[in-house]
Structures are given as C-alpha cells and as structure tokens.
Image 1 (cartoon, rainbow, N blue to C red):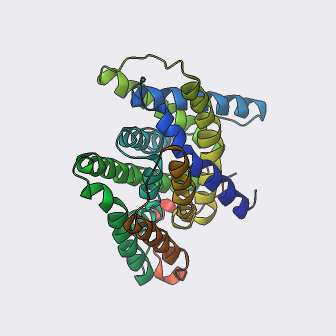
Image 2 (cartoon, helix red, strand yellow):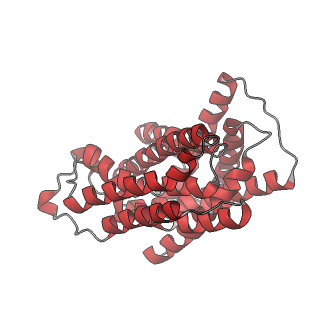
Length: 308
C-alpha cells in the first residue's frame, strides 16, 4: 500500500475511534474492556496469519521487545486513555494524542541519537501553548477544573507511552520482524498484561450487553487495532516514527467534529486558537528540513533492516 494510502486509512480510522473509546467507558472496567479488545484483535490476526501462511515462530529476543511493545502500546497507553475518557470529551483526547509527533522526535533523539533541529523545538513550543489554550476554558470552569486537569495528565502520559511503542517498533524493524507478526504477538502480550492488571486491581470480568458497547468493541478491535495499527506501524517502519506521527495532525479535526455533533462539545475562541496552534506545531514539524545523514548518529542496535 502506498504511503499516502497508509496515511489516509490511519487518519480516517483513528480520527473517529476516539468516540468509540468513549462508548466503552461505563459498566466494564477500562482494563477489562481493553483486554477484551486486544484479545479479539489478536485472535483476528492469528487467523489472518494462518490463512496467509505467515510464520509466527520468532526469535526469543524479538519476543522480549514485542512484550515491551505490548506493555506500552497495546496496554498502558490504552488504560490511561480509557480512564482519561471519563473526564474529557473524545475530541480533547485526540488533541492530546496529536502531540505524539513531537514526542516521537524527542524520543528518537534520546534513544536513536537523532539531532533535534530548531524547527522541532519551535514546533514543540507552539504545540504546548496550543494545548494550554485548548484546555484553558475547562480549567476556568470551577466545576470542571479538577476533571480537566486529571484528564490532561492521563492523556499526555498515555501519548508518551504510545511514543515509546513507536520507538520499539523501529527496534523490531532492525530485527527484521514483519509488522503483521509483531502486531499479532504484541497485541497478545498487551491483552495478557491487561488481564493481569485487571486481576491485580480486583476488576470484575463482566460484560456490557448494550449494542453500543459490543458493536464498538468489535469495531475497535477490527478497524482501530488490526487495520489501524497495521497501517500506522507500517508507516513507522517505512518512514520513521517522527514522520509517521504527522498523521496525528488530522486526528483532532475528525475527533472534535464528532465531539461537536455527538457529545455537545462547546467551542470557545481560546479553544479554537489552541487547536489551530496544536495543528500548526505539527505542521511546522512536518515542514522541517530533513536532518542530513552526517548529522544523525543512529545507535548501533537500531540499524536499518527490512520488513514486510
């Protein structure tokens, strides 16, 4: 699939999946809902691997990295976002998640020794100011201040976990592990960790019979998890975590439109300016000049490899 198509599918699916997450919050504990979701997604991918004769016999070393990816990308990140959804409309969750493109650049510098240029620093500053303005109307309302602050903290930590998962995906590329197989096993580990956290916290393994719950559960497993992650992590491995994170520029537009139509989100001038700044920060990052090869010092353990 060409890069533009991977971008389009990722934006369409993940831009609308935030509302589905909101529908999952309620009767079933977030850790249990996420365990159901990724267990179902992993099962779908296992069947796909069997049907297409993809081998799942992978090196032990790769399993360690896939388990770590499962912990960050298919477990911890989602647990935090599901709890954050109890305090924020889905569109604001997407605004926070859009900062992943900035976090990817910083984490690539920390873990892959890639230089951060001036445009990236400017993008980060503009994006952070935008986040502050977007959430200010919530902070200004006495009754919603605590909820907004907690939701913001959980969302930003969740985005950081997702960024860590992106960097780990590059490690799996260096080990020549194809995206489909790494997602299959990584989501299995993610579901396992969610079940462990559910047991540790005493969460009930119940089920919400509402059509809105089980329909979004299936939709999130198939589209957001299987197809969405397949497209997005393919982007990460083809063009790098920083550039793949640019797809997040469009998430808030799709998600806030749905929040306005379905959740009664009320726009304010400050919030509108804030969203524009967040998107502008991402675009500044998108338009930055590529770092010359001689100025980038990738770590030895992250040498380029091939992946399907």
